[in-house]
Length: 470
Image (cartoon, rainbow, N blue to C red; front, side):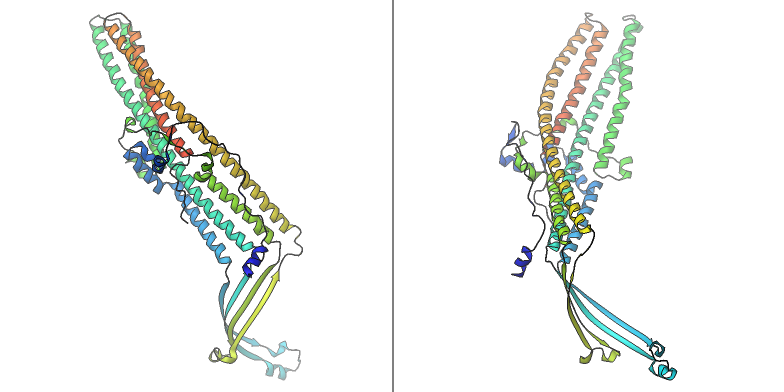
């Protein structure tokens, strides 16, 4: 009955989720059935690359950003423990030992013999246990605990969001690295072919079969490609360093034994189909949305705390102990002492401090709601962009594959006709250059397709534990 009475006295608004108009469905795309969707929790494994799996696992354990988030979770859990403790009585103890001289001159008797007679030295020993308890009349402590619990949830979901972001970054950086390595291999292969072409042309020039112009054209093509290779190698090393930083490698590993696996771009499997996630489920799947909502819940509860601070607080206190002038009498019956009491305290004239506290809490709640709405809007826009990127990257790769077939055939014809003297060397070199460009573009399009897939699953909240453990 007392609990119901106290609950009825609680002040502050109750949390209500903001009303947001959501679409009924996403644009039509290839989706998976429920049974297949259940297997997408560890979505990065769908690329079927053991090296990538190892890097993701290490990033989940060693990434420094995630370590910061874990420390914040511990802080929030400690704050929740503090708020829980505030709702229970405080039991304490006190032990004192005093020796005091009381001079007779301190008394209003101006007779020296009497003063000397009244001068005394006394001992005082005491031992007591105390209990203090605040009755939560207005729900201040309950709201304080609700705010602390929501803050813990916010930090848990923030950690989930950070982990999802780190995993997404690891996958996309890994894909970019493998694409750059594939382009480097193509460049080195073509460079070797160009060098061999120049060597053969030099022999033909020595025998008078070709002009010096043709020789210099072959040399220029070789030298141009040779000048482009270092920047591509630099890009590979930059991506390796970025990947090493993401997975939490030590400075020694970054500078000595940086291992990002020996897989090639072609070894990465392209996941077939995407999980169908209804827009309404996005509010529960995306950890950043859940974190923003938890922050709003905490801010709403803080309004109740601020309103309760304007009202009187009722505190009960009691103590039980013993006091004596001698330690031998300290635990005797006549030395026992006790006391009970109650106090009511509250602001009378604070010149607007309490009202300002309420207004500040309300403004913070408004900010939290706006941030929540912005997070939802940003999340849906990220999904929209990711869906279109996923679709268009697939189309672009298919178009480049067809282009490569045509360019490869053109190059074959150019080489054949050059050997027969039907076209110039410049036309043959153009065909070689176009083939290299098409092969490099194919590696880039493959990277975009894989990265778009990873970005889509990140946007859909893939890989996130929906039931956090407190």
